[in-house]
Every structure is written in C-alpha cells, then in structure tokens.
Length: 111
Length: 112
Image (cartoon, rainbow over all chains, first blue to last red):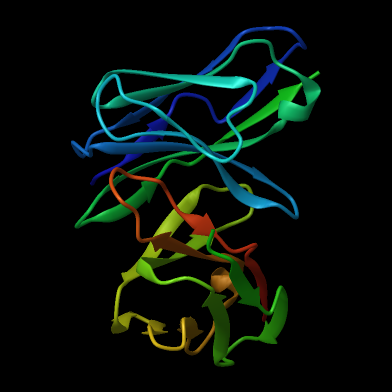
C-alpha cells in the first residue's frame, strides 16, 4: 500500500522555535509538495520539489524553507515559528501517471 | 492563475439521497482531482480526471473540458460519506511541477 508519511500528527511549539516537519514517501515519486490548510482559505502551496536538491516557491513561501536531500524525504522548516503559522500542514507526492497522494497532515500549534 | 469554484459550500442531506457537488475552473487544465477529507483527517485522492467519466463504487466523477466543469456524484449516500470534498486542478505549465489550485471545499453531512 503506497503512502506518504508525516512524522507528527500534532505538534505544539513556542514562538521563535525552529520547527522541522518531515515527510517521507515510498512510491519513488519525483514531485513532492508542502501545503497549509486554513479555514476559509483552503489549501495553499508553500513549496514544492521536482527532484532531489531542487525546490520551488509556491504561493506562500515566506517564513518557510525546505530541504530535499533524498528522493523520498521532503522537509519543511519554520526558521522562527510565529503564531500565524498555526495551521494544518499537508505533504503530498505525485507522478504524472499516478496523480497525487497526500499524507495525513500535521496540526501545528504555535503558542 | 486558475480560479476554482465549488458549489455548494455546505450540503446536508438524508441517508440514501443522490448527492451532486460541482466544480468550475477558469483556465484550461491537464487534470482535475477530487479529494476527500474526513474531520481531523488527512486527504484521500478519490479521482484523477482529464476527460469523460470515472466510477468507483458509489462515487462517480465527470468532467466537461469544453465547459470547464466537473461534477462529483454520490449515489445511495451514507453517513460515512460525511466529509469535505475538494476539487483541485492541475493547470498547463511550461515545465516542472507547480502543484494544484484548490477549491475551498464542499462540507457534506449525511444524516441517518
């Protein structure tokens, strides 16, 4: 059963902390994505990657960075967490023929 | 940028009813996805469409490329179908993966 695994389901961090959200896929997909989901705003793309060590900014990259050192792993980094980054974060991977597979999400609360 | 509109935003129906959720988009696409999200849960991809119709169990998805419109139908609806249904489109791009444009979702409640 193919899947995208996000390391934490719930996370509480303090303002100013550096936060790492990890995502691993086992489908050998080239493309990986990080989204955040907020009520009334839907899903918005933060960053994506179409190859190892490659990254592209999405619609809302400010305050975030990413790392893709291996094909199967795509990490989202909050350099200095702020309360407005409290959200549900969703990772996804895709291939041209298979479409998208999403992780189960990480609900991050910044206090 | 592609604009994706879903209707209705909220829908409450009785068990057994036939459900239709609509999605319209403004710019030509290479694929359209229907996604399902249960409360507090992750997202599951139901269908990926580029033309015609697909069926999986009680779920049917159709797309009309000329009219830039897609529908998701649920037959013999059941309370476990209660979820948010999200339409997402993948627009033509010059190269690389640029992700999806998402609708705001339709919140469906099926009452017993």
